Length: 292
Image 1 (cartoon, rainbow, N blue to C red):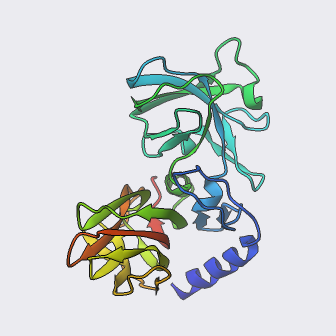
Image 2 (image 1 turned 90 degrees about the vertical axis):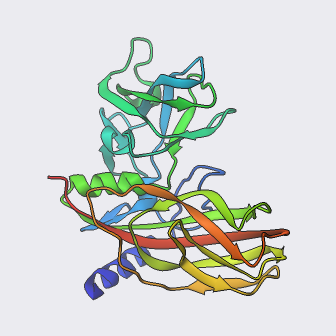
């Protein structure tokens, strides 16, 4: 583990000055996470979030629908380009595990129920985004989306990194993500954020801050279902500006070829909050086994 930590530290130093793209309002980074996606057996999830795709044929109705999409691949067929100048197969970014964020006037995040392809893009659409290979994505849509709508990672590159790591013989996936400012649910002790993190992980810590003073509750913590303080233990600082900086290594529940995602939670005790808002950044790593 010490060797892995030293390698990870070196990797982060190399990439700390660069910036990764993200889905606005879903994983609002805006911080210097870096473009690099891999160093040896360490797979860096934020680097996997830098691909971008395009809707070629959209859905005219909501519910279970199919759309045709492609990835902007710099002229290379059947791959998605990353910002470090490398590429990954389309199956790494378009699969039934990876959420997709469609960035248009009806923006939403969907997780495909099925993906078929790649195949040659339909006649009349060749060359869009310099790509010739397309896939069909079937999902449950809350909104309609037309041609030319951009698509990016809906999970900060986490599932993409898991998929590629499994395909490349396994390794250690490092991930880091940020909630942005989240108003607390005043009707319950738990606030479920839109941010997703792996269900299986080794917590490397968190940094959280109260953005709006929390009233009526006695403390707050950051975690997931079944482990409400996995990232930040109960903190009694309730006024705006109070922080929680935690470093809590923990063993993963289990290790597999992939890991599902679960919502990050803010949990208070004592009473439902009368008001309050929290912003948290969490980070950790997940060991992934080879899928063959």
